[in-house]
Every structure is written in C-alpha cells, then in structure tokens.
Length: 278
Image 1 (spheres, helix red, strand yellow):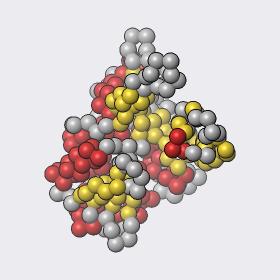
Image 2: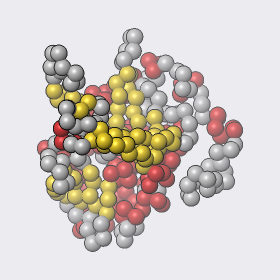
Image 3: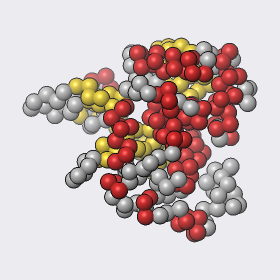
C-alpha cells in the first residue's frame, strides 16, 4: 500500500482504502461485541507489549458487568510521541484489538492549583485555601483497546488497594500500581522496546533512563535485577528528583547490548533514544 504522509512520515498504509479499514473486522473484534464474549486466547507477543506497556504509559480500568467484570486498557501520548502511538494503534488494529487504525486526537484540559502538595487534582477535590487558579490546555492522542474479560488478570496483577475509604469521607480508596512477580516472562526484547519507547530517555554521554515514578523503590529494584539477570544489563535505581519517586538507569557500558536487543523493534522516529548505538 502507498504511504500516507498525512499521518506520519514513515506510515506504510493507505487509510483511504475502504477494504483495508473493514477487512480485519470480524464479529469477535467489532466494537459492539460484549466483553464476556472476548475471552482470547491472546498471542504471547501481544501480551508482551501490553504487560510491558503497563510498566510504562498504559493503564487499565475494571469495568463492572452483570455477569462478569472486564478490563479496558488505554494509553495516551503527547503530540511529540504521535508517531509511536500511531504505530501502536495500527499494530493493535491489525490484530483486532481496537476499532480504528488511528488514535483519537483530543484537547486535554487540566486545572492548576495554588498548592499542589495538598490538592487532589486528579479527582478535582481541593482543600480550603487551595482553589484552582487556571487552566492548562494541551493536545494528546489516546488509544483505547476493546474491553476483555480475559484482561482481568492483567488488572489484578498490576493494581492493589493502598488505602481504605473512611466512613463519611469523600476520599476514595487509592489504587497503587505494582510490578507483578512474573514480569520476567513478558519482559522480552519487543516488550522492553515498547517500554523504552514510552518512558525511556537518553542523554548524550550517558545510558538510558526509564521513568518508573509510579512504582515503589522495592519494585524498581526488582525491575533492575530482572534486566540484569535476564539480559546482563548493568542497571541501578536512582531518585527522580521528587520525594519517593524513582527511575531506572541502564548504564552506558550496557548500551551496545541494549541496542542489539531492542533496536529491531524500534520505529525510526524513536531511534533517537538509542542514538549512537544503532
């Protein structure tokens, strides 16, 4: 198919071909199929991308159902990562995991508060004296996968309850993200590549940093140890500059080995994160 540069420079698909847009849609993966009928099985490579994505920018929501609960997995990326989320959307679309071959483009409005340390901006609740003082607008892309009952184990593996709801309080129980003990099985070169394309950064003369701010220090140490034991990468965990937030470092001397592992799975627009080693 011819390239379509309206989407991103290395796009290889012709989105104006109606046959292409409809050919992969079978009853199992149509948007209105009930989640209880989407039970898998799932290709191992798909699970590698999803589970390593949960280490990065993917998140999951549990959807209540009459008979069974189900799980919906999503990811958002800024305009600067447009090429990556377009690539990801095509990947999942061709495998029947989402309804459209391109992500949704939308404006995201966020409120600024005068004292972020005592304001819950995610829920919109603020304590007295911490009024919202402005609005920040930015544009993002979002990819939403179909809801599957057979994704419930992924949700349960990554989330735990961190705080009980207080009676008479508007505060809800807190979900805390955790690293599952089986992560090594899914931390394949393709999975690792997607994790780095989402949350990795490279600075000249140094190695790769992976943002792991959502995880505890113990979880970050576990991830670092897993990469060292599985791929012989020299790693460490360092403070991100914020209290109790950490990032994982892959040392410069391990960059040739890292590039050998993940380079074949990188899209061209993300290769700058491995600059000098591909």
